[in-house]
Image 1 (cartoon, rainbow, N blue to C red):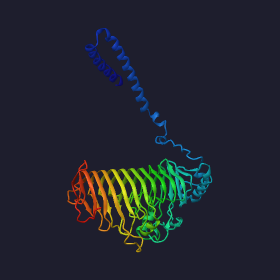
Image 2 (image 1 turned 180 degrees about the vertical axis):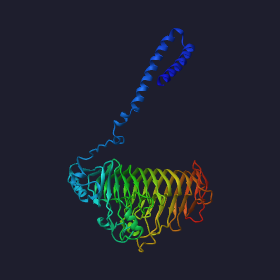
Image 3 (image 1 turned 135 degrees about the vertical axis):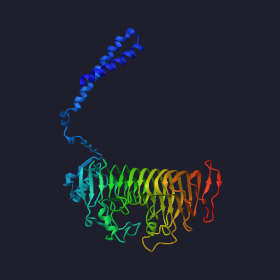
Image 4 (image 1 turned 90 degrees about the vertical axis):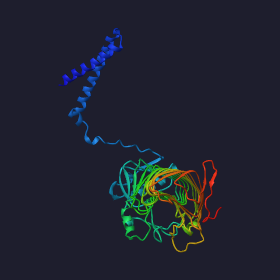
Amino acid sequence: MVKNAFVARFSHQRSIVRKWAASSIPSSQRTCVLTLWLLAFFIVVFWQRNLIVRFASPASIVQKPLETVHREVPREIPSLRKHVFNLTQFGAVGDGNTLNTHAFELAVSAVASAAMDGGGQLNVPPGLWLTAPFNLTSHMTLFLAAGSVILGTQDESDWPLMPPLPSYGRGREYPGPRYGSLIHGQHLEDVVITGHNGTIDGQGQVWWQKHKSRRLTHTRGRLIQFMWSRHLKITNVTLRNSPFWTLHPYDCDDVLIQGVTILNPVNSPNTDGIDPDSCRDVVIENCYISVGDDCIAIKSGWNQYGIDYGRESSNIVIRNITAHSPVSAGISFGSEMSGGIQNVTVENLNVWHSKRGIRIKTAIGRGGYVSNLRFKNINLDVVRVGIVIKTDYNEHPDLAYDPKALPLVHNIFFSGIRGNGVRIPVRLYGSKKVQVRGVELSNFFVGVTNKKKHIFQCQYVHGKVIGTIYPRPCDLLDVYDSKGNLIRGGLSANITRN
């Protein structure tokens, strides 16, 4: 059968070539062309037959063991510091059951001893490394290899209590002290957490359940918190299942958060992704965040405690972020903003299937300011409310707040806003005492889910729109064409103008 098929195929191809040669090639060259064609034909057929035999042979299939088919070549861990240590040198066991807190503490002490001689690097190899909270040290790189997972213990007694943050006056959820973070650092400099996308897993399920059933008496711990530190880098790692806020730099300078994946279940309460709090010179970029509260929330203290502490969040760049929060916002400012927030740029943000896209929230008693925020190239994909400014977020640490401490919200710029499946594109709600000023929107086109009126909502707000805006902006805003010519002035019945 094979021979007959081969002969038939050969005869068919030869007849095609003869017809083509007779019509296209001079008779003096036909013999040479036919000879070259025959040689090429036999070479191709011989190669195809060998290939079929090679891959059809049972022997060839069993030559490689099955387990080697998907085996990955281990990635070599780079040496990023002069002194390099491995967690297993200190007795750690990566079985997911052995508590390795002491091993982490010994390892960090070894790194600390190298601080004045180029610093130290602690490598966490593949495995499940269970631990209670531990502290890092200055001039340290914590490197998580591919397949490595640092697991937070679920035993509440292993988590130490800490004093409340001075700009909050109490724990965020309960009065008094709060639980420490799984990975912690205070008064540090030059600290790096990085790796080949290793994981830090807070195993927060127990904490979420206790919070929901009101069985806790102190505020839950963060996954990672740095306080009063500078020159921090957190890159190329996965953070997941945080008991409370996930990554919380507090009163820090020069912070880079890059290439980080944060995954908390959407029903895990108050599991913010990244919360720069009274921080300056921060870059957050190229991150994917899916959590049970705000994906990114910029803060600066709570009511009179934040006013007295007096440390703003400023000079922050957020770019190339994908955010998902069905219960809250892609990016929030506040509501704890009493120390002030200013000079923030957000660009190339994609918020998908979330309750809100961008939210600014404050209240009487906060004091402080939110000023000079710029949003560029924002995409909203199936979001309930696109842009929100809310000035009556009445959640206070105690009853001692000053009702005369009024926040300022002004100079907020939006450009290049796109979206689809958005229920309410804009909701700008100032109040008689806390009026929103200096809002500017341009190049704004957001597809809505319905054709109801008043989907661009405003009250006690002053600002302008420039160029083509869809849907139609509210009447309180001035309208300019793309060349800067005033088309109509905004209504001023409920606004005190600048």
